[in-house]
Length: 287
Ligand code: NAP
Image 1 (cartoon, rainbow, N blue to C red):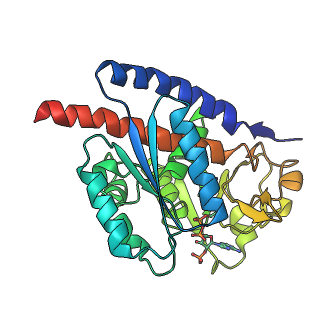
Image 2: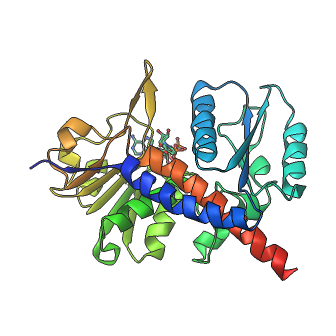
């Protein structure tokens, strides 16, 4: 049996079609969704990701301003920029590209972004609301994975889902999203003993470890849904955390790196931006 490949690009195209309609309505009300992307330093992958996000915004009639700060910029300068963007009514979403240079404290920086403009969903206010099952801006990759599972009509209530990775960016929030959908969730990390024994029990396996080829075929249940979030660049080529060639012979559905979770994550960033722009109108009319 060979797995069905989940086409993240096709699903992202559907999402953009929905967004195009919502952007049209916003524009008819005089609002153009506008995002500020902040890049600090010269990390090659980060520069690539920012370009992808900029292209996604501009090709769907949204506006994007990129602020590229030098590697040695003091944290106070970055925070000053964020405060200015928070106060700018024409900006609906702010995203600071990770990783930040070592002299900066990521948590402190993210906490300065206004929660209502936090399109990455990483402010404590948004992560705390998610934890409490309250409406919030959800981080883009977890939101992308949930949309992929929704599109497959996965019955999460009766599923055992295993998440490999416990980062603030992916592992933890996707585990909470799944719990909030009544799935039974196991979370594994680098201290987990006998990883394969746990991943083999997964109906839905989500891997976000940043460890190329970590998941082999003997670690996957026959017919499982396998979502590979990993993206490790080796000699200019991107590799996932799942050994795709082998695991795709055993899984029921599988994402591929590239063309799986990546395009969906960018589409979800744009969805968060449009959500924030729509909420800004509601806030304005309620004043
Ligand atoms: P991260 O912050 O480095 O976290 C990696 C997590 O994986 C950690 O919790 C770590 O455990 C765990 N881990 C590492 N090696 C492991 C192993 N051998 N066995 C079990 N667990 C292991 O990374 P991240 O930000 O979550 O990103 C993960 C990957 O996803 C990266 O490749 C990143 O580039 C990619 N990514 C892709 C997208 C996309 O749109 N496709 C978006 C975001 C991230 P400990 O906590 O114990 O250290």
